[in-house]
Length: 163
Length: 161
Image 1 (cartoon, one colour):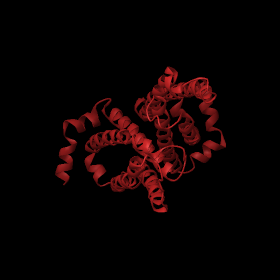
Image 2: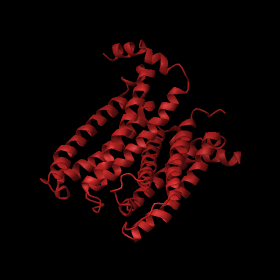
Image 3: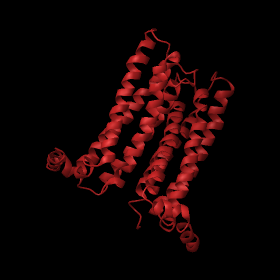
Image 4: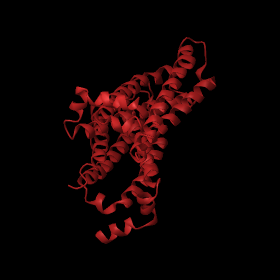
């Protein structure tokens, strides 16, 4: 494993991110913009499922999913590049490990919300859409996972790098 | 001027409080990031609507997200003050910070133009917001400016020398 991680750090992409003047800044900036898109749009959709503002159609919000996926793609690409630049440090960093696990859980929750709420809203043009307590709890969990886990652990990666 | 301001900040009790614990800065950073996602999330919906998409949502409806954006912005203003008060020497002279503050000001003016040239006249029935070029331009600009604000913020540590 350690050989693989060291190899990653020696690739052209990793060296561009780690050593060029703008590599790290550009990649990290893209990661920040992508985060805002993914976490921000999910938060708004989840807050809407919780009931606010009731006048906004969930079927219309569902049309923003391609934008959310664009943000995901941006973060997937920039995230891999950032990881490669210091692979052997990130891999063993507890904050990083928690972050990745929470991203996977968060994505499942987004997928669940789409399947259980947004798709139905789109199919019935928002008519008779019942937002059950269960889906609302899932919406709340999605916000908490993205914010408390992903954003928090992402921030803390730099602070616990030597733990 | 900046040196005096930084010196004054370092003599305030707030500076002492914010630097009294190692964890206040990262905690404020985390809140700043949560605020930024909420700000961008709400503005994405408002501005994409303003650009002419999602027409089933009326302008009045989408405008209900503006308080969320303002709430998020106040979180970031407050946590931003914590950064500045913790480490004033670092920010005022930083070109990325200066650029970021300038962009936030432009974003504010841009939002006011949307509010007073498009939204309020539209609610009064004087303007059709879906036919307004000002709506489309200010909405598009808003997204571009806020994306640049994020980039500006991310660049602050890289232009420190």
